[in-house]
Amino acid sequence: MNDVAMSGGDLEQMYQEVILEAARDPHGKEHFAPDLASEGASQAGESTIQASHEYCTPGESHQFNPTCGDEATVHVEVSDSEPHTIERLVWDGHGCSISQASLSVMVDLVEGKSVDEAMHLAETFHRLMESRGKGLDDEAAEESLEDGIVFQGVSRYPMRIKCALLGWEGMKDSVAKALAAKS
Image (cartoon, rainbow, N blue to C red):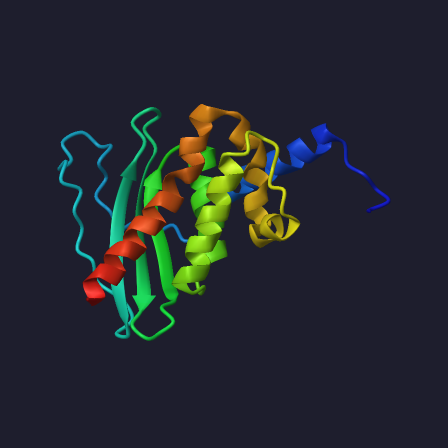
């Protein structure tokens, strides 16, 4: 155990700072999706899916949280070779600091990982969100989430859980679309 113990309040403050920093400087954010929030925007929300790597198959998913207005379009490029790897993961969207930070942390966690590893991380993050602030009983699982563990406090607030999961659901759906396109 560390000699310098942090109180619960200090730890919560550190977690909040990590979330705010990830929201201010989001990783993987690009502008490629139509802005559905602007007046007069097409409600179709379709964008052309193209891979920037010739050895990849792209997939894209648009996610919207109607309870708060957060939305994100997640674009992945999955390698054609086995084991399938997430070669590129970018997103576009807007919303609260929790959704934006979760998307940023997700990019750092899953880009370059195999699809199986990415899906396992998504499952672990989902379990964290179901923990209602208690965290996970598995130390290795918590460590696998790296900075994603800062969302443990978010799991105490049911209305905020959807914000944290928005990007993860988009990643899973876009990977499924990319894999389906390979068939």
